[in-house]
Image (tube, rainbow over all chains, first blue to last red; front, side, top):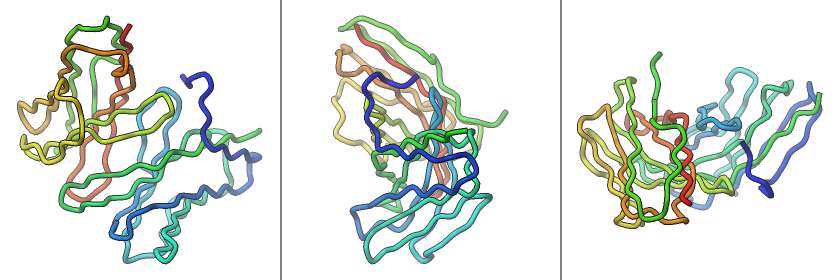
Length: 113
Length: 111
């Protein structure tokens, strides 16, 4: 379960609303970005990825936007559902050959019914 | 089920002990990883093996030793456990330059 006193950035949304989770990355040489969802007591689960030659990619109810100019990544979730409640991480691949991922600090998405 | 699996899920042990965590993937991936997630949910790479060869070795105490008997397994052995080693350890696997698939995690508590 969650640790007592855990203070992650939190986004609280109403069920059915759209959610936008933001992430800033640091290395302009990073060329591959991934969003992961981590539910309580589970491992991170792949949601969607994007390579640096794209600025937008869509999946089922999710969209990732990449702005390389300001080194910013966002995850948009349409029609947020209670099952979307989790911690969301962005990750950047700084070294393509080794596939080394650097994870962001995570954002807790809390969906209110 | 095709997946990344880890054992044990929970591990409680005393300081100074030596313990191992096992990881197996049946996804046919060439690369496997170990991550540490601390109490603030910060997730950091520790090691990576590609076809049994070590390719990432972050600044980790040498009390931590990964072992890859074959490309489907990557075990993590920890000697002389310390309080600060308490964390959740995740194994992951991938093909080159693609998304990584994570195991369910092993919660290690050192008392």
